[in-house]
Length: 129
Image 1 (cartoon, rainbow, N blue to C red):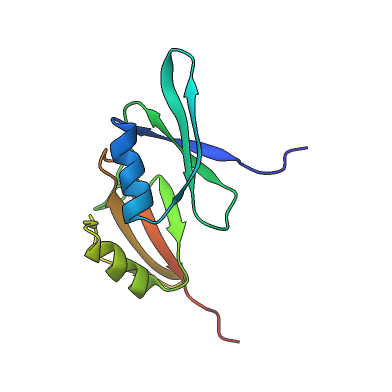
Image 2 (tube, rainbow, N blue to C red):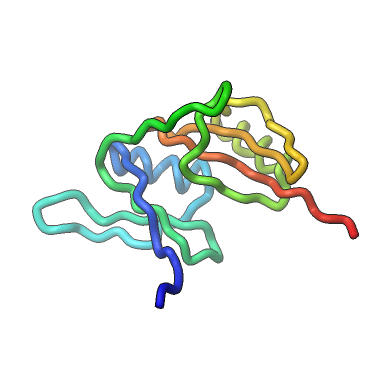
């Protein structure tokens, strides 16, 4: 039966520009970079220690329906230290589209890659008990 989701595509206008953002700004690592016959290269990135990958594939990013005042991220990146990750990404030039949103379960902030793909930085609250 089904075991895992291996990868999802992120549509980008320029694979090199996207690769620079995902690796040098967000800290992903290159997993596969292979040419395809008569087309763009198959290019994937992933977070260290995690099997799941994003395919950086040429195309047009989709548009989501807004929720109240913001459009949700299509991709959610978890962190165990939300404040530190938010500050680090900001120092690397990431511009967040939202303020930090606090929920009973944790914190969330939305940003975009250079092509307008929306990503969410999420930190779950540690349960005390």
